[in-house]
Amino acid sequence: HLQLVESGGGLVQPGGSLKLSCTTSRFNLEDYAIGWFRQAPGKEREAIACAGGSDGSAYYLDSVKGRFTISRDNAKNTVYLQMNSLKPDDTANYYCAADPRNYFTSYDDCNFSYDYWGRGTQVTVSS
Image 1: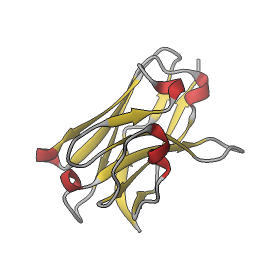
Image 2 (image 1 turned 180 degrees about the horizontal axis):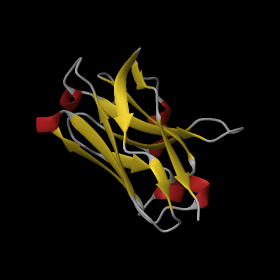
Image 3 (image 1 turned 90 degrees about the horizontal axis):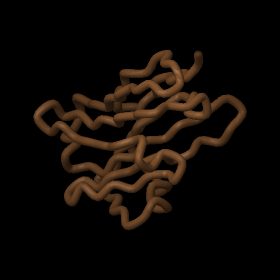
């Protein structure tokens, strides 16, 4: 179900930052566990971060730890992915996903299935 909308992608130089947004008008994201994924051309889709709906615990792919951060603005029904110190290897199409049932206890759980997805937003890191 494509009911999420991502935005905030673009072209940025190495070392730069972007803040991606994920929102929907269909349901309250506060009650949903969120996953952020990316897929580069010719590569498998990979989970980069996820956060629980109620307790807010977040988990990250090792290569983005310390650089990427998930946050929520419940008043805006939006989940963000703040990306700092971007590298050319971060170039990919970034997707958010949501599911009301998921409960995460580790990064591996970010690969659980999700009911709702967005179409993605392109992030290109290049000088």
